[in-house]
Image (tube, rainbow, N blue to C red; front, side):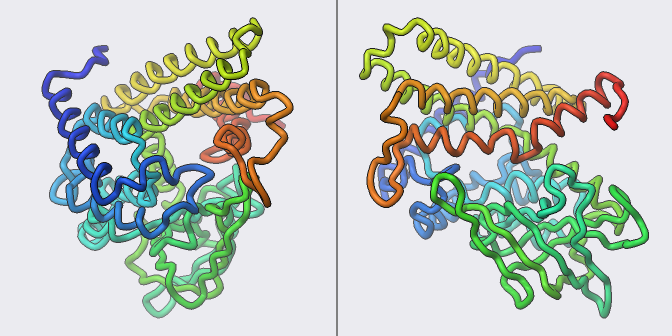
Length: 390
């Protein structure tokens, strides 16, 4: 398998890099490095304007088919995400619409849905959130109890979702709901597209360990959406939801790794500043982290290449297990390098340094986007043929 980029791909890289440098040294110069995990409260309105700037330049939906996207190859999508992260461009608000809902609609939506939802996402004008997890059904997604009943040409929705990123800012939410109460578990679920700005929808931000609140709990109390705002047929929600999760582990993971590299660089700088490089154990852990990041990139590229060839490898689950565990250990390394200083806040009332933010936010990595325990159970059953645990 050839994982190298072609000359044409490298010319595309130069185009991406030049555009980012021009815009991030112009009207959007103050946005470099802002936003992202644990920092989504920063510069909300300017970053919304940045989404529209990306859309106007055609950078949203690179891999989507025309007319809404460019139909770019997987490798060019990887290049864009790497250059975006390398330029320290701001954290995206449109991630969920572009990389989760958009590909799902492009693959499984009706022509009417593609025409209605893909263009505003591609323009950076429509923000989405994901209504999967519930207080009693987080990792066990098949146990959702939010229900939706079809009456008078519309779905009426009742229930609660939790850990919903950007719900307080989103225009729409794709909701996994139980539409057939006689069915259990994976059966009887449907995938609904629900407008957020209506009576019957309440989004309440949840403050996390970093003191920020990018996650929300969302209450649906008689919220409504048109009967045609369902992806797939009634009862096919599980299949559609799994397709969305597969898209989530796409090319954007390579940009995430550039962010990880920046965090590792900050830790190495702290090691040198504190003369911690005299500690052989710290040096070993830094070397392990450096090697692990390169293994992560190579592994991710191979997993993505297999996916492009039409396969659905369980290796994608392994990739999630790998990077989430690696990142948690990186946060722990940061605290050990800082020593007692790690327990001192940068300022009142709860000011944190970047390394403290890395540590605190990384604690959630093995939980969100599929907990490690669930990932291991799936691999054990589907890849190794082991029986379901009692």
